[in-house]
Image (cartoon, rainbow, N blue to C red; front, side, top):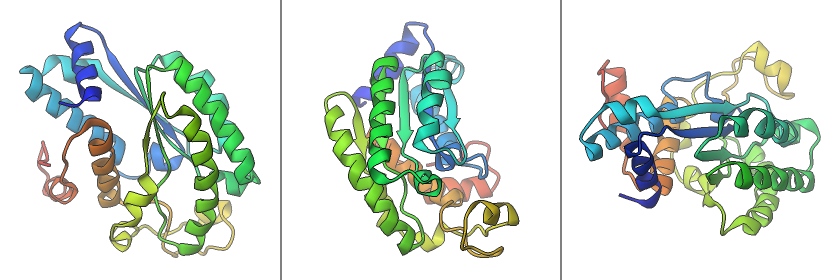
Length: 247
């Protein structure tokens, strides 16, 4: 059992709650797709802890997960939400996936880095453990090239916190996968009102389906908790209607 998972087990054995906050934009909120990577992580952690602890009550009752993903949020908004919404919940662990919405709100890469610095400074003081992840690769090369500018400036900030946080390079890991299998949603009228240059019916290149979310969960579970996860089996079992999908 890896260190982060052991921390959860120890906390639960003491009779305490263990709270995980998932912070980010719509790729973190994932309120538009089910199952999603947050739900998968919560499910797998509870299943694995039940096995490790030999009982189900403590992990299923006292491991709590907070959806602190805010659709459309930029780093400017996340700075406020961290202080007003996340830290007051007293999470033991915050998993923060960076946002790419800054480019839509006229926040350049340098400003993005400054805002990110403030967010991480708040998290490292107000939260037990912190994981920072850059966001997923998109199914659009132009968008990826633009996002890389933000990733590069973010890396300079993250280095300041190398002894205080764990870092997941989600972009690199996700970009190696078969993205065409993950991006199957199509843009609606609500989407085109928010993003210029797209049409109703175009492939949504930013928001992955459940299979894509399961692969995000695979990367997170391995990098943070040292757990193996089979996304394809999990999704197949979910689609087959199994109450407890295998993985």
